[in-house]
Image (cartoon, rainbow, N blue to C red):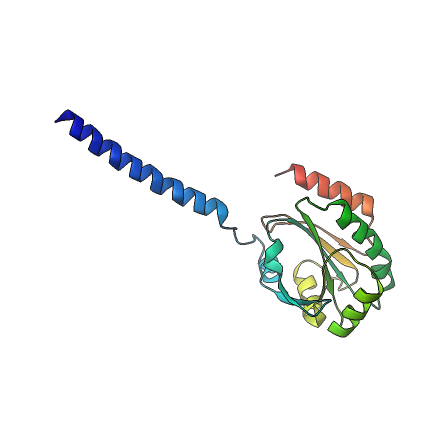
Length: 179
């Protein structure tokens, strides 16, 4: 009689533990929504890339993001792009992704991408991108504007004007260690 009770209790405990394990595993695999509303709005975007293909920005939400707002007509923006491109190559295989948000037309973005070999995705964000950059902290409305976003959607830092690559590298390293 005692053996049957033991087996029944053990079976119930086993099922309960398996169910709890499944719940915990599911919570760990489901990406959490971004902490910041503007970041959540950014991650909800499906933008057209330089090749004319629509892409969901949410595909990168589990990485540290360097989101660079730029335009083809902005000289400092264009000047920093080869450095950002080299940085993306440097971080290949690491959980860091650079995204270029062009405050420009899809045609201009596409022509620019064909002319210059940029190693990270360039998107045509248009004037909506300008408003999004304001929501992410670009109160001046200037370009280039870059924002560093953690994998959980937390805004880590923003930069107005031409980037200083050593500062950006240092910030990426610093925030990568803070996990």
